[in-house]
Structure formats: structure tokens, C-alpha cells
Length: 596
Image (cartoon, rainbow, N blue to C red; front, side, top):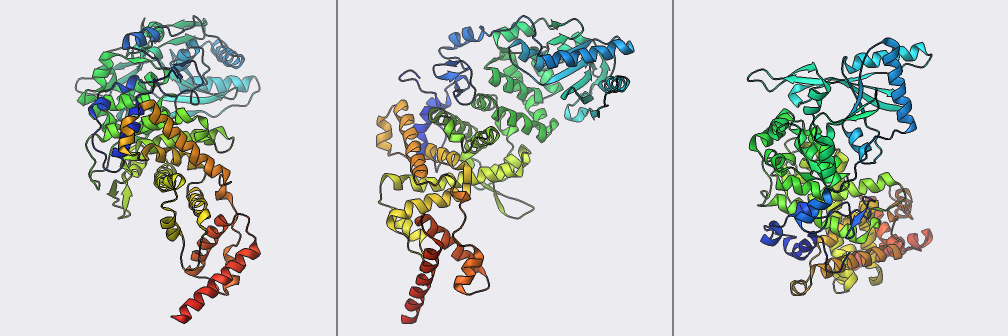
């Protein structure tokens, strides 16, 4: 990265100390900055061509960015893999054998990705003279004739009330899932928002697609790309996100298309068309998105954004288009009430986390070699940072009658994601607050005595030089392999001395926070605490009962916690040494009690 160049989120790092507890509105400089144009970290998220240290994102003035976006490389033809050729040949054999006269067209994203030189396993076949289910039945009939096993056919029924207008059939062909659907034409009766669906022409179908770049077809019969809107390839080359028909009508037909437009703009770093942005911000469109589309479908789109290359860009667009509170619906009442500019605060936190994570590198999400686990840590890091400003905001759950974090409501009820996602976000945020206690201890020993008293009790005394290890070990045993994520969020919110912050430029501030993260990470790894959650207790519950000569009860749980702290303080301690410590501790306590 050139000297002096810092992503806009770096400014947030300077003001976060003041936001951490009170979270007032952002300063005007940050609020007015066009954050949706800033680059996202790709060095460890998206290994593609980098510009000024960031991948896939344009740098410079808006005019320069537009010029860069016009240089999207689009192939003239589609290059098929060997598997794709075999699949398409099989489908053509079915058409010829039964004399169906069907034109087979691959629709949408597969064509777009192929023209961009990307692989795609998302093959959707559009049929011009029959339904997807009927064609799948013919495929099975042909398989039986040639002595191959017939495959099951899954049918996803249409649901107009949820803007699912097409019945889709799905089956495995050569071990690849293929979707089949008929080309569609829609007719709206007067005063009705639910269309009458009919088999249409390829041109009619193309104009009913969500975006021009997704309206392209690959004709399997003649091996050619078809652009019936006349704009698909052109907009792909220009990097424009445009709807084939007027944007407002397209979005009212299926409001989820608003989020799809944002997702594709972020994924490819394309520009949202001006008319499209106006339509996306329309109050009626927002109302329909909130009422007409199931929360599951909204949550799925958001999850795809979070797992994609540029999630911050997507969140910025959602905020800037006034969609934040539609997408992330809040409970009716919260304690304290949701503060002003909450959407700005939330997006600024995810932006700051993204910038710092890019600066540190992929180690933030590494804890083992499983790529899926790393992707999951990255994903939950983004959700945790997005909802970081809401960490101390709760609502009364009517079923449990308990105060529950608002972030849990958003993840479970608003986005319909997994319960485990909501729980992990809460745990990450809680661990990040505990890390905030540990960080100053690594810079000075001034508070070690206070923490030492907090960790000890009448039976347990921790050596002063082991206090930090014990405290860090307890944090890691709670958050496990998400500890680096929790540390990252803690570093973002970690307060700096205000007078020092005023003298730092943004690059220095980001560098200081990166160095602080590395210091804490090295402290933990040097003490061999990475993986401490897998540590087997030196004494289990049964052994503790034997030493204390009791049969159980709450006392055992307290001693298990003491034994864990002793083990963290004495990493090389043996079973016999631990038992001797327990006996001595009990003896000392009994002497104290007898003398009073």
C-alpha cells in the first residue's frame, strides 16, 4: 500500500475510543464520506488482481474508477469443461431421441461467469416448450432405455405470495445438480400484483430477469451466447448493474432483486445504475421487501454477501440506500432504545474490522488447516463486528421472559440464521470485552494486583507472574478457536489516550492497532495457550471428590474451576502436585477458620 494511503475505515479507528461506550453519531467527515466506493481487503479474502494493495476494487477519483470499471474483460465465447460438454450432449440426446424440438438454454449466472472467465457449477436450463418436471421425466425415461439408473426429481413449487413465480425441477445428471425451468411470460390482471405465468419466448424471459448481466443465455443447441435485451454483454463490459425493464417495476415484481443487485455489485465491483438506486430507495419498494419476501430469503442473501469478496461494500450500499432497518429488523422495544445513526455505527464497525483484518492478514481466521472452519470464522467475525455497537442492547423475549441481546433477535428472527450463529456472536463479543481487560495488563503491571484478587479466593493463590496466563487461558477456553476474532474486535474498540490519538495520522493509528494485535497474539502463542481449550484437566470431578472425600454437590464444581486455574498457573504441574496443593489449601483454610 502506498505511504499515506489508508482505507476510509482507518478514520473510524481514531474515533472508536469515544464510541465504545456511548456510541454517539459519527462525525460529519465520516458520515459524508462515500464509503461504498472504498476498497475491500482481498489479499486474504479474494486472491485476484490487486489495486493499491486491495484486490478487485478501483482506486482514484470517481471518473478514474468509472474508467477502470469499463475495462472488464469479457470473453467472446463460452468455453465448456469436459463435464459440461457431456451433460449438454446427454440433454441433446434426450431432445433428439423423443423428437421434442426443445431449445435448451443455460440461463443467468452460469453464462455471466463463463464470459468473465470464471468456473460455475450453477447450471439452470431454460426450456421453450415444456415444464422442467416434464423434461426431467424424459431424461429418466431415456436413462432407463440406455440401461442407466433413473434419478430422483425434486420439484420446487411456485409461491407468488413470496415472489417465487416459477416451478423448478431439479435432478442429478452426471453427478451435477441441474435445475430445469420453462421460459416465462408474465401477465398482470388489473389491480393484482400476482402474475399469470405462461410459457414465453426467450426474449420475454430475458426481459423478466433481475439484471441485464443475468439475462444472457447460452444456447446449447447451436453453442452460442444470446443477448436478447441487447445490453447484457455491454453492461458486463462496462461493469454496470442495471435492470432490463424499469427498475421500480422489476423490484416490485420481486423485491428480493434489490438485495441481489447489491450483492452482484459488491461481488464484481460493478456500479449500481442511478435509476436502480432510486428505485431501491423507494418507500414502496422497501415496504414490499419487508412484507412480501420471507425472512429466510433475505437472510440467505445477506449470508451470501457476508461470504463473498466484498461484504463491506454490500453493507455500505444497504445502508446508503436506506435498507438497513428493512433488512436487519429490530424488536419493537429494546433496552436501551436503539440510538440515532445505529446503521452508520454498525457498518462503520464492520468496515474497521475489515481494514484491520486486511492489515494483519489471514492469520486472523486461522486455527487449523480446515478452509471451511476459516471461512466460518471470517463470516462470524463480520456479523460480530456489524452488531458490535449493539452489544449492550437487549430486549425482553416473550417466550423465555428473559433479557436477550438484540443481535440474537436480528440473527435468529430477522435473518433466520442458525441459533448457533447467534450464540457465537454473543460469545465473541463477550470475549472481546474480556480481552479489553487483558490488553492493558500486557503494557503495564499496574492492574495485575486487582485481577489477581479477582481470580483468587480463600483456597487459591496465583503467583503474580502467572496472573496474565491464567486470565488469558480462561478467555480462550470459553471462546476456543474464535479467540483471534474476539481479539480483533477488542483491538478495534480498545481505547487510546485521546491526546495521543489527536497527533496520529490514520496510517499510524492502523499500524499501532495492528502491532497491538500482534503483541497479544504472540503473548498467547508464546505461552502455548493456543489450543488450551483442548487441555485435559489434571484432576477430573471424580478425582476431586476422592481428595475431598465427598460424594458430590456444588462444591465440586467450584473446585474444578480452582483446579483449572491452578493448572493454567502451573502448566508443568503434575497430578501429585495438584493433589498436594488441594490438601494444603484445605488445611490452611481449616486452621484459619478454627482460629477465628
